[in-house]
Amino acid sequence: MSLEVVYTIEDLRFRIARKRAAGATIGLVPTMGALHSGHLSLMERARDENDSVIVSIFVNPAQFNQEEDYNRYPRSLETDVELCETVGVAIVFAPSAAEMYPEEAYTSVEVSTITEGLCGAFRPGHFTGVATVVMKLLQIVQPDRVYFGEKDAQQLAMIERLVRDLNVPVKVVAVPTVRDEDGVALSSRNQLLSKPDRAKAPVVYRALRAAVAVAASGVTDVEAMKAAAAAVLAREPSVRVEYLEVVDPATMQPVEKVDQPVRIAIAAWLGGIRLIDNLLATPRR
Ligand code: AMP
Image (cartoon, rainbow, N blue to C red; front, side):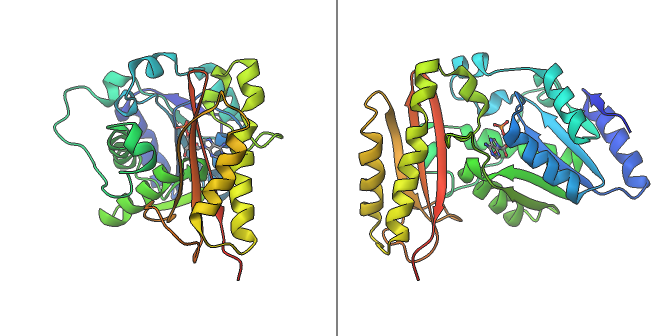
């Protein structure tokens, strides 16, 4: 069956009801478009696990804390739809901002603790914007499974908790980060990097790897992990580190010892572009 592009909630609900009536299971992949192989890996996983895949493409104004970032965020609906078609996606849901937010909302979804550090500390309101739009999409689509990338580990942990806390009847599926050959995590924002900045971007992944190597060697002191990452980042002085943290993967709270799997997470600015990445580090047993 060929792909359908749907712009309204009413139309989407109508088409989903038809699929449900035919007994289809549904997987939802929420995105902001400018699709790349990272998104593709979520869509393929969804296709393998469900009868029908719905991809939402919505650059959600509520999760941008800087208007400039929202305005310059890449948009490429036509090529995104073509890519979705190659994977066998059933429906692309591409609503306008007015469709998603027809009036001032009095209700929002806020997940505490998990969202307070890391990106949450630097992007006020961001995670409430994400949690609210994801909750809306889950209400609209009511999928069996919803797919998120580990690249945005704090977002993933937040959604897992939101679904548990509010008894949302959906399975959250975490998908590993897809990287370029030089280790850079794929991101829609990468295309905004200048050529020289793109050449410097692998330093973030190298720093994460250095920290993971410290933990793998048996060192349990988090400060030693952070020092190893910081030393690598210092080799590219034009890369400005926003945070470098080692956290519990479920709560996103800082830890002091690597006595369980931990997540090392970095946010860094290159030119005017903010990149985030993370890796899981496991203690040596
Ligand atoms: P975005 O369009 O950036 O909001 O991302 C949509 C989904 O794709 C989120 O669940 C992201 O975590 C996921 N994603 C983005 N980049 C990657 C990547 N390089 N590998 C795997 N998943 C990704």
